[in-house]
Image 1 (cartoon, rainbow, N blue to C red):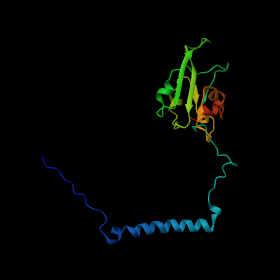
Image 2: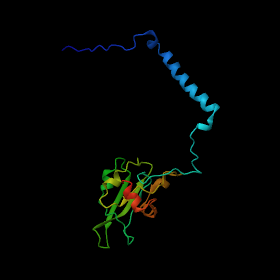
Image 3: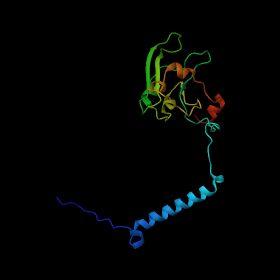
Image 4: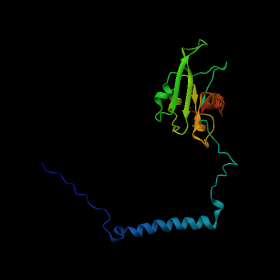
Length: 174
């Protein structure tokens, strides 16, 4: 058995191309020129003054999660486990129980989302057949001092309100 060897022709025939340090210095010269221009006249720099001025968030923004309810206040979630199954990060944990209001058979007894594991992909929202979970809260800064504070329970998810009206949400393409 013979081994086939493929010879690759090396690019950069000229001496200037073979001395890569010249190209590195050219790049550093461009960087230094930008640095000097911005250092001497910083009036043209674009700066976000974040805590004082909040950014404009569109309805398509995937922020923190929330659970939606019907007009009578009952939860829309039917514990079908579609969001938990579709989540690539496996950050959603659901336990189902029997529903007593007669709408469906099941209701979640436990619905937890670990925000430290969540990658905010939005697959849970797309998978939900009842539009029970949304990411339209407008909350983009999720911080905490303890790991336990980053675990959103069912009560936390139900208490979080949406940042947009239904018309804005539907028009935003969510």
